[in-house]
Length: 182
Image (tube, rainbow, N blue to C red; front, side, top):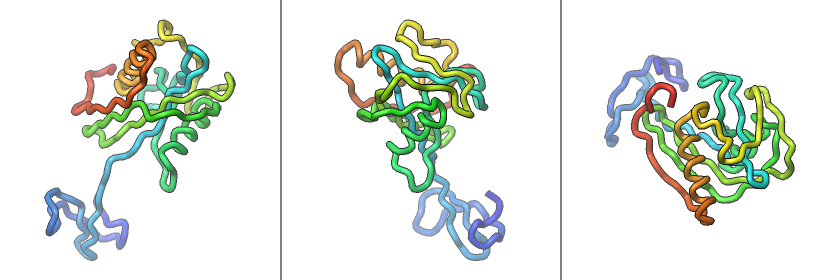
């Protein structure tokens, strides 16, 4: 950040009085600009014993598979964001179940939150950010072609929980960037 979004003056990076972290502070109006993590909302859409994946038509990770998910918008609930992203990426409608994974990625300032979900019908097709949509059984998942480590971990938790017959909330951190390709 170079300029204040309130008045347009230059900002400097310093610790404001009473704070313990450096922030962008306007040199003219003293507005403190807080930059906070972005929420990524999505779901694990299931139909019978299969789940729906989307092949990405955009960067990052163009051409690789992922669960439908994306950035939450202002004025949106977490569940609304998960349903919207599923409609946008897979032209599919879902009924959400419980929150399944919360994964924090401090190196990119993201928190990814994915719900278990049921497709309301086996109706889906690629949205504008998607090359292809497909239902997969567990043994068919293209593990080596998954776009993100967060999705890999979410799917491993999901399938382990399903085999156990008991779903639980999984909360974890990925404190640094995974190796290239992960």
